[in-house]
Length: 482
Image (cartoon, rainbow, N blue to C red; front, side, top):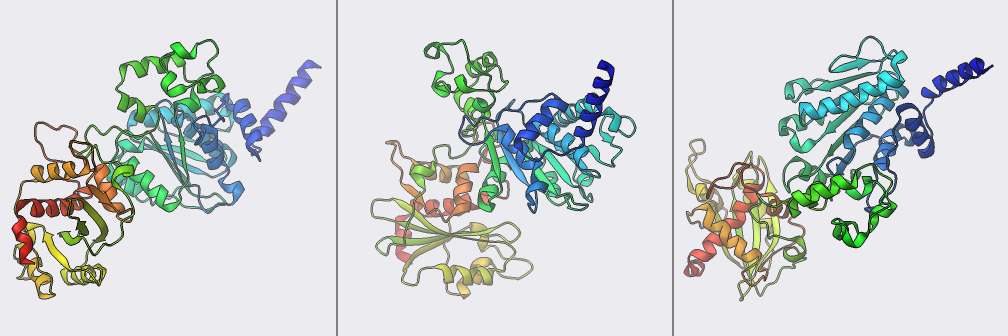
């Protein structure tokens, strides 16, 4: 009788393995029963829990969403890779014919997610496998497949898959990450999804850009930190715990797996800025930022055009790289207000000139328009210079050759002077300049007075701002010429 019951139970469990869960409770039970995994579902940090991401990604087809794209911003050791592996098994087993690819910032990271996946399949679904599990791929009898992709644009391009899981995108090659945007495709009743996960190590780079883009496009962002995955604290006194400043008793209600002793050790040997970025997901370290003192709450505010202040324009020329024009006011006390920005690519000088004139307030009297000194050079193709093109349309440009470093220092002095007072303010509409102020950075291997990274993205906005300060600071008498 016992053998019959065992056989019956085995057949029931076997049938349930291929029965898709219909709600969060069923999904929790499924991954616990067949994968032996319990993921935290308690939002102690107030933003999200690992299970929120798992349910969202799994329920894409259930909810009828047009796609399953999402972004995960979580701490080191926060379970991003494990969640990705669990989802990969769910897709492969419960969605016949599903093609899943794993792409990671390093081969080691990709290996970890794939090893989790392969272990789950071997231990709980081995009878569903078609052939052997190789080092980088596996196939199921239901025609689903899982494969690890290498960090190569050539390897990524030209594929059409259902689900793409990108792990630690902060470490991605930018060209590879861009190529990955185009390879997911919905068919056979399976909704395409690109899930990107990472810790944000730096206030610039791919993860920072991904978060900014997600905020603009309403892409779901699942953000959790140490407190959402830490183990329950049962026998410690808060007043004597090194984690008190950040924890404040939160761990008493935790349900995670991250060992408290490990968290204490890591906090004690890390810098405060690194701890906040890597484990609390607060803000990345600004150690390589050119303007670490720039703060949105101090330097960004709504600014209306004020006819009583002098108005300037400052331009950095570009065609493939962005053409940038900033409208900048200065009051009698030397405070500087950036009220508008114009950014364009692959437009002629004449087109940009017309836009600059159109966007200038009708009642404004321009005190000066400054530009990149390179704009005065004659083009071998057109036989003229950008400066001359602007002059033909009634915009006279001035410039001054200067070194980059002194100009950056003047910007820093206006961001916050020695007395702690801000004298540079930027309107929230200048989204590109604000992002550049936070992201413009020095190279990883920076020695002495090495110049900031010329990345073709942030440097153009900063250059436009720098030309203003260089010309204003150099010779006040210059203003009389306008």
